[in-house]
Length: 219
Image 1 (tube, rainbow, N blue to C red):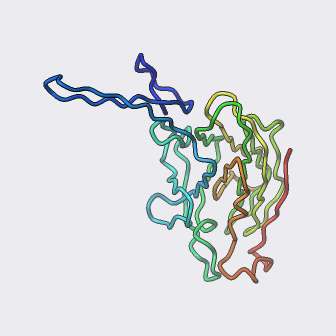
Image 2: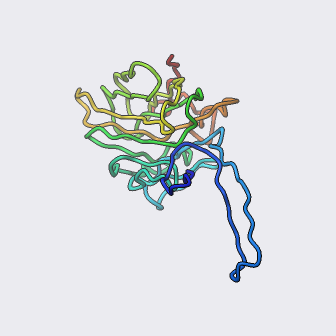
């Protein structure tokens, strides 16, 4: 985030002026530094500092609330849990989750007017999930995930255009028989797709019971 000349913080990436002066005032200098949002960010939703962060990802705890300093975070504290490796080679990315019963929003900094690909990993190793609505700001109509058996993840890409420098992803439980929503993480990128985080370290076991994922696409 940059600060304008009047000291007001802006969430839109911009240039900043770095100033340095000799204490007696004999010399003084300034340099302009442009700050840009990274073209790829992968958020791994961890259980505080107790579960591992996947390689190449940004570890996020459930109590990491939105801050213009970090440029990401939840609107309200999310529940977080670590299901463990399960003895089945579950990866660092998929083993831990953020979850809740009430709606909650995860936000991250973006560049206004730029088209982003947002991939959301919804599911739970241990519990059935159903009737979960996911709303991606700037991505059109929210999508509904009907029923996910334990170990099944809905992995979906939405194309979204940021309108205000911050993109919001809102998770809502619409009812059903299972209580609450759960999400393992989010990818956001503008260029080459980094690919889906694997479910298990033993990739040949991707399709066994309790270790499958669905891969769908949203406009």
